[in-house]
Amino acid sequence: MATQAPPAYELSHLGALEAEAVHVFREVAATFERPVLLFSGGKDSMVMLHVAAKAFWPAPLPFPVMHVDTGHNFDEVIRFRDEIVERYGLRMVVASVQDDIDAGRTVEDPKAGRNRLQTATLLRGIRENGFDAVFGGARRDEEKARAKERVFSFRDEFGQWDPRRQRPELWNLYNGRHRKGEHIRVFPLSNWTELDIWQYVEAEDVTLPSLYYAHRRPVVQRDGMLLADTRFLTVGEGEVPYPATVRFRTIGDATCTGCVESTASSPAEVVAEVAATRVTERGATRADDRISEAGMEDRKKEGYF
Image 1 (cartoon, rainbow, N blue to C red):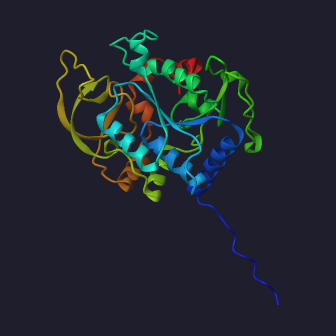
Image 2: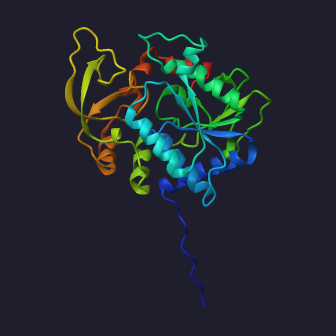
């Protein structure tokens, strides 16, 4: 009597992305001595944390999280960050840009915002804590320079990235070799898109800050973007704040992170909205990425996320 073949096991698209990210997390945990996960409370870092928690469940995360705090973050996001740290029982390191300004290690230009100052603070946090692998939530679909990076991105003793010295990753084999003082940036979500992130948020019921969903707030129109009128934003001459129903596609420094007009108030509604857009979230809502065509690549060469 012929036996029936067992049904083929097939992963969904999201399941395959999650499995790849789980493999990356476990590979790093087995290879490196002192990894850390960059965590801001934004959607990508929340998805990254959610996947990492699944990768090591029922054990706690075998590494801490680190937030590079500009001091100009949205209050809602800082509260959310602290709630998540407590809920997951995380060990958190906060690297403060304000500390570097106060110590004279970096100089603030009030007209330029603080995002670029994060590079020095990030590198200090890595150096002082001896981290040899740093998980980041960057995705290749976000921006040209990020599309160039491997999953394991080697950084030299100065924290710098050289796109011409990328290590091959054939068959998903990752090379984590480094000497003392060097480290590896690791991007488990490299192959995800913004739509994948939101579909995963919906499927896995991932909690996000309220700013990602439609809400009413005063905004200022500047350079084709809507910026939230917060205590960190200096309203320019001729700029008049007005109320609008908006949401944020990405969350960073409040002085350079724009929002978009939207009525999407649930993950399902955001999924539908993102599926129809043709501009990446960084291209549409991050003023700090508009400095030049190669602005992000130049910053990454210096050691930026």
